[in-house]
Length: 310
Ligand SMILES: CCCCCCCC(=O)CC(=O)SCCNC(=O)CCNC(=O)[C@H](O)C(C)(C)COP(=O)(O)OP(=O)(O)OC[C@H]1O[C@@H](n2cnc3c(N)ncnc32)[C@H](O)[C@@H]1OP(=O)(O)O
Ligand SMILES: NC(=O)C1=CN([C@@H]2O[C@H](COP(=O)(O)OP(=O)(O)OC[C@H]3O[C@@H](n4cnc5c(N)ncnc54)[C@H](O)[C@@H]3O)[C@@H](O)[C@H]2O)C=CC1
Image 1 (cartoon, rainbow, N blue to C red):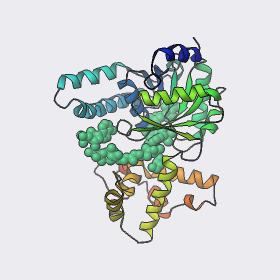
Image 2 (image 1 turned 180 degrees about the horizontal axis):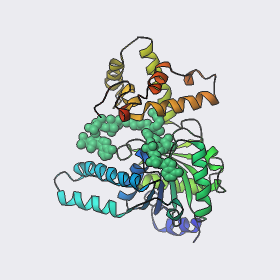
Image 3 (image 1 turned 60 degrees about the horizontal axis):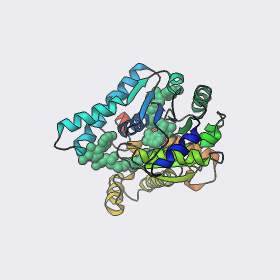
Image 4 (image 1 turned 30 degrees about the horizontal axis):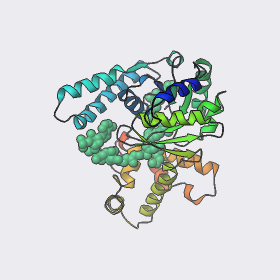
């Protein structure tokens, strides 16, 4: 059955809001984002296969999904240990973790890529998957900063390609940005949007422009916060307190910088600066560069703008 006839036939019987043509999902990359996306997809009844490079990595992902689920169920079923266990077992029962990407996409309706933020590596992966996946399979990248069109050129399925940008921590953050490139068909866009809703997220639509919506606004905000501290106008602590209590943000900019990873922010800023060198919002940032040079990436290395117990 072709993808389009699946949508048409099933779409007649169910409401557009709840119904998604995506039932079987393969997530490539089981790091921070891939494991979170896998978790929310599995817990909403999708059949999910997660792929990473080694058995050790997928074992760690499985453990981190279980840990995250145990936090979720405490809130979802506060006084019902049995329901907590059932929810965790059901979700884990929808998950398969493996190391072979080619066999993992053979029956996928959707492939979500969440591997390292490197264009060449993403292109190489998608070129391989394009050969292996069935005709109807939709491809999506979770990239933070690389244009979707630059990744999609590695495949012959631009019409079945788009962006699905989730947020960290995936189980908690309620948004998915759905990104279309000019080639993305209406049917593909609708399927991606329906999948976002089916995993319990609010979706927003965005063109394939730098940073989409959230990162296009957040990156300059974070960099401007660093510049404010660099000028000595206020301390990092006070800037964080100010933005939490004065603007209602759950984390201050320096807490968020350390949480996301300073290496990641630098990578994004450098890339945008390279492609738009005169844009004042994308100018290099001295103290960010210094911390990254010293391998102080934030929470994951134990030190960034703040220090953390490892
Ligand atoms: C940005 C520039 C460019 C970067 C480029 C790369 C990034 C991207 O492309 C896009 C992004 O993701 S940007 C980052 C977006 N994320 C944010 O802004 C997070 C902001 N922080 C928060 O929302 C909360 O602090 C947060 C929800 C994180 C934690 O809440 P709290 O601060 O209150 O801390 P907790 O007390 O530990 O947690 C509160 C409740 O959340 C539950 N929880 C937290 N993490 C979880 C996880 N991983 N899995 C499951 N449950 C989780 C936790 O259970 C807790 O619930 P309660 O027990 O009821 O308190
Ligand atoms: N960290 C964040 O806050 C966010 C990251 N993103 C994007 O999501 C993607 C993944 O980011 P993270 O999960 O943070 O990275 P991560 O470093 O935690 O995980 C990446 C995983 O991909 C695996 N991998 C690398 N090459 C692979 C390949 N060829 N085949 C299979 N697995 C491979 C790695 O072994 C690793 O486990 C990136 O494109 C990033 O820009 C998007 C939203 C938020």
